[in-house]
Image (cartoon, rainbow, N blue to C red; front, side):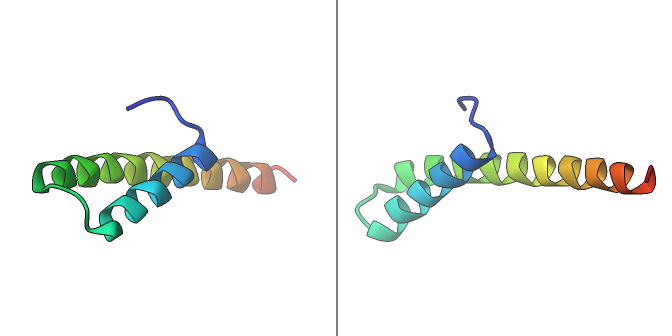
Amino acid sequence: MEKLNYSESIKRLEEIIREIESGDMELDQLGGKLKEANQIIAKCQKKLTQTEDEVKKILQNK
């Protein structure tokens, strides 16, 4: 998976959802898209958790 920032990752996830919802996808392609979507979701969740931890640290040091 290419290196995408958070915003680009969300846009890619939205693209994948549109592709899946279109119904014009072969079963093999669907599996690949779902795998990619899961990887993007995991990456975004990790980034959100890291950012939340950073914000908590900043607020605790005030």
